[in-house]
Image (cartoon, rainbow, N blue to C red):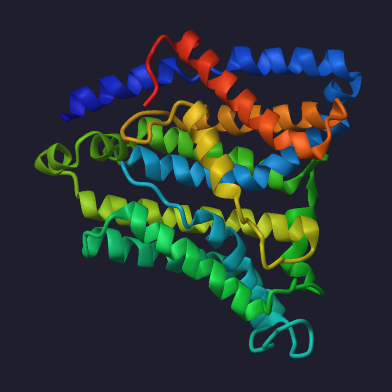
Length: 328
């Protein structure tokens, strides 16, 4: 794909940014009719805070998908990164802590673990040219096993306050996690849509050979985006850890299905080179609004999974109709 065609594809992708807005409006109206509490400020803030942690996984996955790869290991990074930090800073006798690092290093260690996982994924996918799907599937299993191993299958608790701050702080009347989520999405909307690095992602996702021929350093860009994805997943896990004041052995388990659903209904193509960061944001916002409406409607928890899946399919059809373009 040439730079010109990549730019043209990006313009078309931007036209699809608002494709889910009609569905979100419909959900908002239905939610209000079912239970007026739906549009109350506290309820909306609660929805935004709960989605903010998973939103960072969606942001990470969207970047990787646009570049033509996929990262299944993000959900395990979401749990392992804060889990390793907790393991290192908690004193022996407190769950399975080693107590070898001061509590003040918990946050940088969490982010460093995320970056390290992205680095290893890049080594296997970019350097050794292994299949990205299989590599990250294997990494998902390995990381999940590591978290279970270091925690003994239990939950880390009694975490230092510095570890919990970002997940439970309130800035200007809103949870800090919402501000962080909005700031990161805004930053990557600009990066993906208006910078050379962003155009490189679309070019590589569309046709890596053509991108390489156009002078784009494909390997470097892919390695960078995998590391960024790992750090974003670790940060998301850190926010959840702060909100819950603990790291469970199963933290993040199964989240990858929601992440892929949000990215795809938001218009991000599994084949790479298509979709926008804003579209991915509307995708995860729609999913969490739907879940909230179902909860307020008193739908039994046993049925929410099935109904959530059915509504995802309806949202896909609505997005298909409003955008006028086939989904891949």
